[in-house]
Structures are given as structure tokens and as C-alpha cells.
Length: 245
Image (tube, helix red, strand yellow):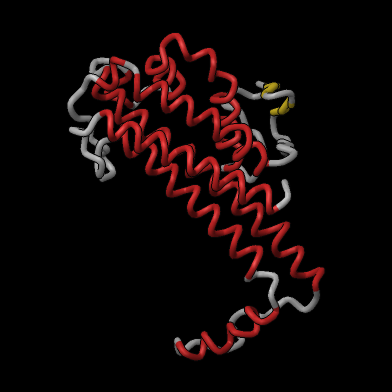
């Protein structure tokens, strides 16, 4: 995992980039609904997740390691009418380190992966329902084909990243173990100089999930989103509603 300082700087920077490009897009298409147009919401959903990721890092860094924070919990529980010993404080620095590094950090990484993937998927399906209404069973078809259609000639630029992102999301759903639809369908994907081995029924080594997500994937996702929403076939439509709104 990168140093906390570097992670905070990177997440802040990537969030700022999403803010900038969302603002540019809103200014260039001021008739689109900022609240519920899928082309704008795709930026907003990512920004919301980066906000949550940053808040977690701040809590992890400045509150969770503090004994005074743990000591305050019984008082807060009593204020709510809960038993004061509902959660016990870690008994040693080693216990606290295990709680943070082995449990909470892993939960944080996998949650951001899954929710970011879902945010992009829902937006892509909402867009393709309008741009290609007669294809993909009204946006319910294979996601990789939907990306390929929306990106057109730019798809090869992002194909490796998208395949890795999809496999990682699926693997996180299986507690880190790769279970392909077809038995024995092992895959090996090299992305930005690192090869990720997806071997049937084995735990996948992502080496450094926060680095992979925030330093490698997130910048590529921003470029991909820009390519999709600025393409003529997508931007020409007066309204593309996000069904989740």
C-alpha cells in the first residue's frame, strides 16, 4: 500500500480532475440536467466515491489509531442507550495494526473497487440505451461489448484496463478467489508493467490494490469517460436520464 500521504495526495488530485472535467462538460452542454443526466452523473458518482475514500483515509490516519477515540466509545454508547462494552478497544498496538491492515484496509479497497465498477457500468448501460436502443437488449447485454460500441476506435486503448477491472471486481465478489465461468480458463493480464495471474480456484495477488485503483486505473477511467461522453454519438442527444435518479 502506498504511503498514506501519497494516497491522500493522489485521491485529492484525481478527484480534482474529475471535478474539472465535469465542470468543463457542464459548461459545454449547459442544457443537460446536472442532477440526472447520465453523462454528468458518471463524473458525480465517481467523485462521491473518491470523497468517501478520502474520508476513510483521514479517519484511519487521525482517529482509528488513537486510544482516546477508542476510549470515547463507551461514553457515546451510553448516550445512545447502548451497553458501554459493546465493542472492546484493542488490547495492544499489534491488535490495532491487524484491525487496520488486515480487516479495514481490505474492506476499503474491495468496496471502492466494487462500487466504482458498478457506477461506471450503470452509466454505460444508461447511455447505450439511448445511443443504441436496438442493440444489447436495451442495455442489458455484455458490458465489454457496450464499452466497445461506446468507445468505437478508442476501445483498444482501454481494453486491457477494462478486462483487468472487470476480473478484479468479480474476484472481490469471491473473497479474492478467481472462479471463471469455464473451468480451467486461466487468464494472465499485463497492465502497466505488472502481470496479474487469474488461475482457476486460486486467490489472486493484486500486490497493491490501492495503487492499482487510484494511481493506475482511475486516471485511465477518467480519460475513458471523457472519450465516451464527448463523442458525437453520445453528446448529440438532448437528454440521457440516469435511471437511478
